[in-house]
Structure formats: structure tokens, C-alpha cells
Amino acid sequence: MIYFDKVTKMYRDGSPGLEDVTLSISPKEFVSIVGHSGAGKTTLLKMLLAEDTPTEGNVYFEETDVHSLPKHALHHYRRKIGMVFQDFRLIPNKTAYENIAFAMEAAGRPDDEIASDVPYILDLVDLGSKGGHFPHQLSGGEQQRVAIGRAIVNQPDVIVADEPTGNLDPVNTYEIVEILKKINELGTTVLITTHNKGVVDAMGKRVITMERGRITRDDAHGQYIL
Amino acid sequence: MFTTFRRIFSAGSQSFARSGLVSFATVLIMTATLIIIGTLILLSAVLSNTLAAIENKVDINVYFTTDAGESDIMSVKSSLEKLPAVAQVTYTSREDALAQFRARHSDDQLTLAALDQLGENPLGASLAVKATDPSKYASIVNFLSDGSNISGGSSIIERVNYYQNKTVIDRLTAAISATQKAGLAIVLLFAIASIIIAFATVRLAIYSARDEIAVMRLVGASNAFIRGPFIVAGIIGGVISAVITLLLFYPATWYAGRSLSDWLGGFNLFTYYTGHFAFIFFVLVGSGVLLGGIASFVAVRRYLRI
Image (cartoon, helix red, strand yellow):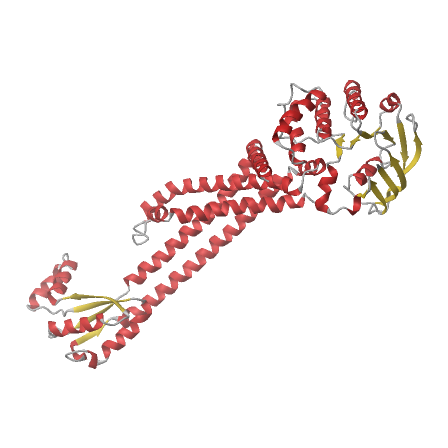
């Protein structure tokens, strides 16, 4: 469903972000991408989201060449992918409820669906009673759960999580991983990047290891080896 | 379509209300800008009114000899009134002229005593002629100096004071129009400067929301859906600023009108403001809406290029 075909990204200063990356991800997979900082994990995700363009090669999502999409069609494409970030990236002057509702409003979903889906999603991420809280009134783990709620509310085909547990303590990390696992079991492809050995080893799923912009390992039931 | 519009509107008003301090600063700056624009309107009204008042004061007086018959003078008056360039002709008889002279010199005993010594009335009758336009005076004077137009001949006219006043009138007119232009240019400069500052403030406000804009894009919002609420918030700020400005002008013009009215030749700013309220309202609210809307539109565009 996601296919990277010999993707190379050279930065303007000449340093490579990605070098000749070929990678295929099937539907309903749970894939962890591991590697040191600067190994190219985030660049890889940026290519997938069309936030940045490759110097060479193509990225396909289903049958579409992502980087050939015109600008005005990008937001339709991005609705197929739910994004979760290390720094949560919630909209600060919107409540937890409104942050999740925003993704639905942006997708043009009708009011009655929003009214019924948002509370359901809040319950799913265990924040049923905190819908009226603003991001600054929530803990890091709670904010990340709101972000996950926002990512899944439009029922995307893929959830992409860039270091989702990077700013969280072990207890919250465990909860976030459990939620992501549950989402994956419900049929959504999940792609996460992480530094956290515990997270990867506990998962027992496919692990892709990156070093200096290249893929050095790709194990179907991998461990965190660096 | 309607749902999208409603969502954009409610998101815009919500974000305006929630970003309290930033909204407050924007409103403050926009209010300052609108006050300057409003002042521009009032100033141009004051200047053109003063110019009109002075032009209105310009007239020529035709003095007749003391032996000119009243019927001759009346026929001159009626033939002048027939000219298209003439707006108004006022007759002052010899007796009236004397009464006015006495009244003017009522505390000058020496002059009055001299007048009494004279025994008879030394003053001639006169006609005050007002033209429709200051530039028409020359043609009126030409008409009068041509004896064939006047029953009793041009000999009954002692003098026409046009030539004496002409230079003063011309200078005054030039001075006023120069002041008008300079004043408007300065205020226009202020207006442009404050519009730029207002733009910069709105941009700064949106700069603080740039991460938010990036997130909205990544969540799959269309550009219009992201931009809309910012424009709505900008327009709300503009309308609030316009209303504040209109309210501030109320006591300001009342006070200015009361204290400056004599100095401005009877022109009352407050009467002008209330009389032209609809016009000023539309200019200020329109400027506020455009200022807020366009500034937000331009500012958000920068951060939509992800």
C-alpha cells in the first residue's frame, strides 16, 4: 500500500537525508522504524506526507505517486493518513474535544457525525471526562492521546507516528503503545519511528533499522539492534 | 457549503475571543489607524469648508457718486442681476451707509464730530455684488466699466473696489489651498504608515499561530478552511475597531466643534460628524473590514506553503 522506490533526498548543503531507500509496506502492518537521530527516519515520514519532495525516486500510496499530486489535492490525500507527533502539535486555543472535532470539520463531515464520533473517540483514548480541557491543562500523555484521537477520527488507512513516546514517561509510553496496538488490531496500518528499545522489543512486529539515510536491516519480527 | 461557512465563522470568532491579548493589541493598532483615517475625512471637510467660507466672503462693492439718482442705481442693480455670473446684489442706500458709518465709529467722537461739521451726507450709495464663482469677478467689473451698459453712464460710478481686494483674495485662496494640500498629504502619510503598522501587527498575530497552521494542514484541512477563520477574526477586529473609533469621535468632535467653531468661521465639526455619520460610518467600517481581512489573508498565505 505504501511503496518507496529508490528514494534519495539531498539537502541543500549537500548532506544526504535519504539514500536509495526502497521500502514496501502492506495493509494492516505494524512497522517500527528505528535509528539514531539524523538517521533519516523523520525525512522518510516527511516524504510520505508530501511535506518535502525527494531529489530522486518516487513515493507511492496505493496507486498514486504522492509527489505528482497538485497542491490543492494534497489535503485530500493527507486525510488518508493520521499523523501523531512527538510534540503532540495540538491547537493550543482549542479544547481536547475541539481538536478532534477540527479534523472532522476540516474533512467536511456533518455535524451529527461529529457530535456522535468525538465522544466515542474520547472514550477510546480514555479521555471521556476531559473533553473540555485545553492542551495546557492536560498532561503529556493525555495530550498525546488527544493527538491519537485526532489522527484516527477520520478513519484513515494509515497512522503515522513520529516518536510518539519521545516526550513521555514509561507509564504513559505503555498506554500509548497499547492504544496504537489496538488501532492496528482494528485494521489500520501503523507506522512509527522510535528510539525506545522497550517499545520495539515488546511489540514483536516488523522493524526497519536506518543508518545515515540508508536502510540497514528489515526484520519481520525484529528487535531493536543498533 | 453553508456548513463550511458557518464553521469558518464560528472558528474565527472563537479564536478572536480566545486569543485575548493578541486580539486586544490588533484592535488597538487598527483603532489608531482608523482614527487617523477619520481625522483625514474631518480635516478635509474643515479645509474645504474654510475655503468655501472665505470665497463666500469675497465680493465687490460698486460705490456710486453722491449725486447718482436712486432709479439709475436700481437699473444698474437689475441689469447686474440679469448676468449669469452674478449670484447676489445687495443695495446700500446713502442713508444706510451713513448709519453704518456712525455705528462703526460710535466710540470715535472725533470722526463723528467732523461728520456733523460737514452738515451733509458725504457717503454715496453702493451695491455689493457676489459672483457665483470668484473667477467671474473680472467679467463683472468689465461689464460695469463699459458705460453703454449703465443708464446715466459710467460717470455715476465713483469706484469699484475689486482691484484693491484682488491681490489679498488671490493670496488668501492660494494660502488656503496650499495648506489644504499640505495638511492632507501629511495626514495621508500618517494613514499609510499606520496601515503598514496595522498590517505588521496582524502578521505578528498570525506568526504566533504558524505552528497551528502547519498542524491544520497536516490534519487534512484545505487552505480555504485554514485561512477562513483568520480572515473572519481579522474582520471582527476591524469592525470592533471601527465601532470604537466612531464612539471616540462622538465626544471628540463635540468638544472640537464647541471650541473651534468660531475659529473655523462657524463650521461645527460635531454637526458635520452627525450630519455625515452614514458616510463616515461606511468609510471607517469599510476600512476596518478591508484592513483586517486583507492583512489576515496576506499573512496566512505565507504559512500555507507547506
